[in-house]
Length: 323
Ligand code: TRP
Ligand code: SF4
Image (cartoon, rainbow, N blue to C red):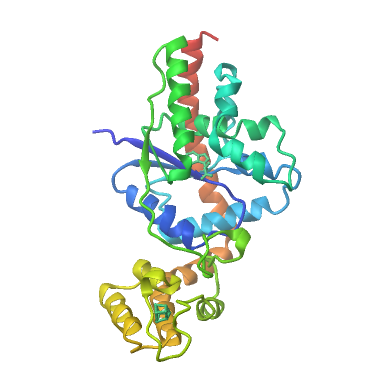
């Protein structure tokens, strides 16, 4: 039986961090067992906001791809590719009413929030439309995303319905595969965000990571070593829940509440857990960093496969539209 196809994407706007790992990559890796997967580095989406400076974007594409590969995305099973290498993504704009785009929540929010770029561009308004094209052009049946993207997938379904209504059935209406994201705050306890400087990059050197963990915010009730604390309201506790095994989590819970352990000790346990998961990847990352051309070759090969799939859909589109 032909497997269902999924597609998802990530913008190459910065180094990937633990949030990307537990919020997307771990899930993408698992989905490879069940689906035919297309994973796309969406560089055009990065340009919807950062259009005035494209410097460094190629390096970031390779850097993110290295994190993808070390996380376990397998180019032999999944198509890993670069959006701008497939021109067909530009289709669909003819039939989409402007108000559909103007009412997308992320559009309104970012228009209000982002002050450092002029966002009155066709490209920015078209962000979710470009995303819809990403999905429809591969006739993806489902899209793994976090809750912030649900409105975009809903729009994609509306556009698919509209196209099919005008020209006949071509596009499946893709389902949202909502990713369960565990609670993982930033190292200072606020929401994890690159702009707060409270993330831990997947590419972090182990000794730097150790310092970051050592400086993490803890339950403020533990002023002295003898003061008991509560791991449920401590970011270090949240990290243990995600990265440590059950025994360790139990030890942390008991030790924290009884003041049986100190926060420094607790943090070093966390560092050990992180190293268990990330240490081997760090080594693999270093190998790949010294061979960027190999990484590009993988993406070029994937982009070739993606172009074939997109070309097949485009033939159907032209046929349906009689153009
Ligand atoms: N908008 C998505 C995000 O910011 C990235 C993205 C672009 C995407 N195209 C996609 C996600 C297609 C899923 C499918 O996370
Ligand atoms: Fe947080 Fe651990 Fe300190 Fe408890 S012992 S407050 S969980 S760092």
